[in-house]
Length: 141
View 1: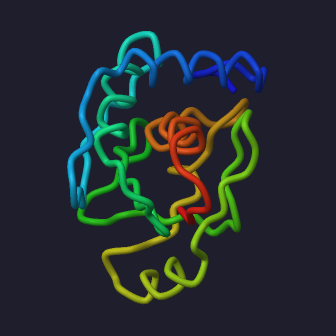
View 2: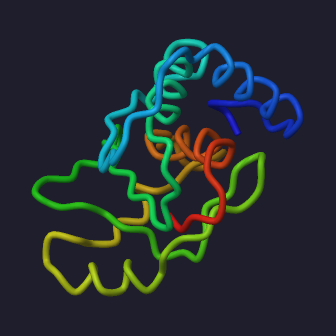
View 3: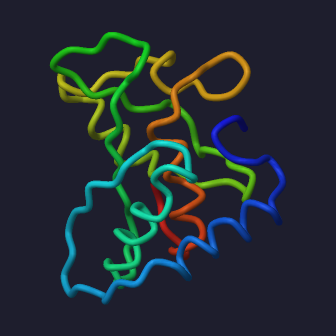
C-alpha cells in the first residue's frame, strides 16, 4: 500500500500502539477534526490523539484531503466507487450522499485525484482510513 504496510496484523499492531500512546481525554460533541496526513511514524500519534478525543459513534465520516498531484481549483472531487480498500479491509462509501453532492457544480469526479497504489500517488485520504477502521465501527465514508 505504500504509506503503510500491506500486512494487516502488522498494521493493526502499529495503529493499536498509536492509540495506546495517545494520552488524551474524550471531548463531547466533536463535529470536526483536522488531522495530519503524513506517514504514521511522523504524524500517526497526532492523528490517533485527534481521533481518540472524538469519543462518539458516527454513522457518516467525511474526510477532505488535499490533492498533491492533480490541480483542482474551486472544486472538491468525489469518488465514483462503492468503497475504498486498505490492508484492514473495505470502507464503504456513502454512494447516495455522493450522488446528491455531485449535482452541485463545486463537486466533481476527477478520478486521478483518488488514485492510490501502483498507478496513483494520492495518499491524503487513504492514510486516514486504517486509523478510522481501528477506532470506529459501522460507518460510511
